[in-house]
Amino acid sequence: MKVELGRCLLHERLLESGKTAESLAKELLFKPERIYDFMDNKRVMPLKIAISIADSLRCDVRALYELITMDR
Image (tube, rainbow, N blue to C red; front, side, top):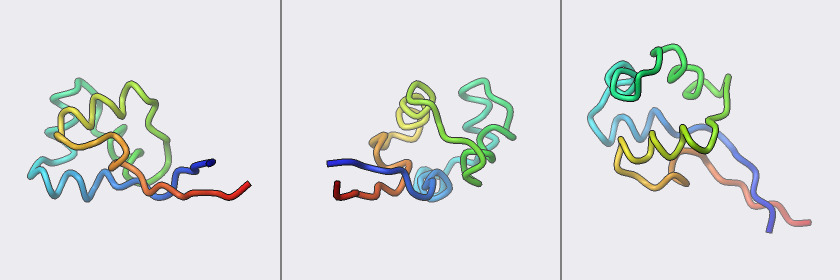
């Protein structure tokens, strides 16, 4: 089964956690613009960063993106 990344769900996960993009960026020592780029689908999160974000937001790393199943 092939999986494609759909829309970034970081904004929704931030709302659920009660954190802001700025507070997440500060916690992870990123510039807020980087977090906003992920949220706006301008950048795809590298796996290491996605794991760090998921840990900070206490969610599963798979919950950071819509996952689209593709038939081969």
